Length: 503
Image 1 (cartoon, rainbow, N blue to C red):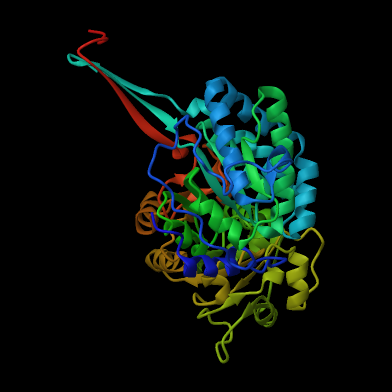
Image 2 (cartoon, rainbow, N blue to C red):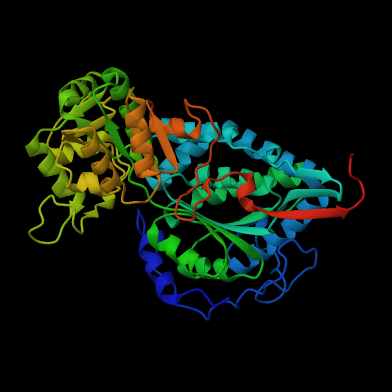
């Protein structure tokens, strides 16, 4: 495998290490870490996987490390301990993480909000309380076949150590969900968190490891870099112990991960459109749209980002939104907010070409956006919305703010086509409000997204009000979809020839 592409990695710093609050400048580059060797990730042998061949004394208490190589080495040792203790230990770790996430949801949600300064406290808490919906070891059922020539067993086995990159938008929830999935699959994990949410992530890792060591005797099954940098990202991606990458972030970090030569499971960007036709219930649609777009101030990658609505029902939909906690901006107020929320090349105005989102507005409360728009709103306002054209920056950019653009369309065909354009072929998430099965089917086929929600809020796609299981890492660029324990396994086949058949 070639070393991590230097140009791509340097691009990542602007997106991963400095995009939101408190940018971290890259440290002086050191020599690239050695290329990984092609040997089995599940080997019991102790490979020489640290820069100096051993852990320094006193480093990495309860999984929090200052050095990336040491963190990877410790996670490898944790994986080997887990392997020796078997499925019961995996199940115990899953139980610990789910129980602790729920028990500490209020405190950890507050700590994360204080550090990141984005989103809403009640929803930070809710995202931790629902970690119990992430699947565990029960997901890994072997497949057996028997016949005249014997019996074959296929089972799901771990890679070894998984490296996970987590975002600032859902730091502890993403980390916790990843731990459940990755450890249920039998792996150890090393995290490089977004610098804007590194302290709360390290806190969770420390507390999880304390409980895991106390209950199972396993040390450092989960490790994390205390102060993540560009160099720690590079070192983790290049480390011999790391067999698989799980990246939750924007397009540049996804591209960098896919260029490392290691298998990467990548949860990239989304810009989910909503299409509303004239067969839906406007009240139900309005409530669902507000619920999804307002959740954690629209930080969810699956959240409703723009609405296309048939002209015949547009006024009724917007009226129902106004009646259910959303506030409509007029054209002057929209212009003021657009100028504050985006930067454009000279002469572009509100057009979408090369618009850049102002990070000071990402994940902020509606009141902050309203002030920039020059309007007073009630404290309980959930969402702002405004009529725009289809090319407006609020439509075309994944803006992650509680402000929803509404675009009128003349036909179902136009609504689906506009939705397809705004989704940018990310194949992430789309939502429709319709009682016409043919319209639903047409949009599903046209957009071909990983998540497609019908007649409900976007979180229903993750089991929150709909059926299904939860994960905060939705791998759209690499195609795995909503991650689960199987995502982090190899399939191994064991064959007995001519014996043990059952007939």
